[in-house]
Image (cartoon, rainbow, N blue to C red; front, side, top):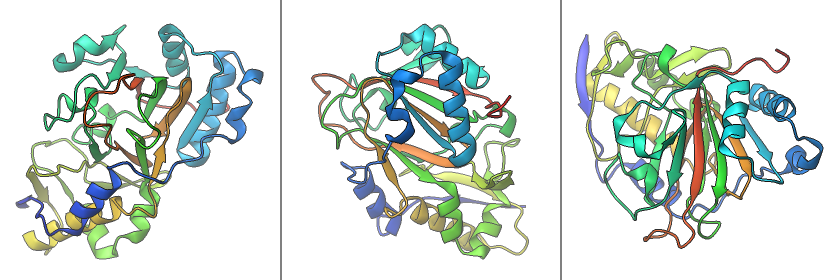
Length: 292
């Protein structure tokens, strides 16, 4: 089995693309449409049915509440959509409600500390959630509720990138290598790319300036070829033509299929917002079928 290390260079094309994409991104996602008539839907089963249907069709769902639900209603919605995963990381416990709801508040300024970034105004690189965990332990759906959008609309957007579009842009040779390569530290983790019901899904996060140690079972591949495949994946992940930014507004719910979309966050203002951005997040291990 081949092993090696990937570390980006400042000359890599994705470095420039990432910088541009995660700084006040200007391609908002339309989350209006059928969810705009929210007054007709008030119960958890009704909202759940809408979100399940959208997730099945496209892997991305939205719902706009007219009246902001409380955290217990949000948890009830999450548990109706799928199986809620507890927040067990000791580093985030001060931000956790009821063991399952993570409060994402931009209470500190820009930081390079990965553990503090979710609670800051710093950008967050594109990733799939829990990319190093086994498939069984990875969340299937990431559910968000906006309590307070924070600063200007161009700040702190959640960026979503469809994995299907990334796949279509990758050369077959690169995709083949990624389907035989995984993180070295995660012995039981999945390959970076694998086939699921909706197509190719990726278990991968952009390590930015940090090193990624990998192992590969790709027959005949060299270390340079594996690193080139990772570099190609990063290049396509940050293609501005396929990325969209969610402009948060109070009461907006977004559900992201972790097997069909990468997600990240554009930068907020350099200092914490006067009205800090505040989202609630739940991670769901599965999503029931729309008619279940």
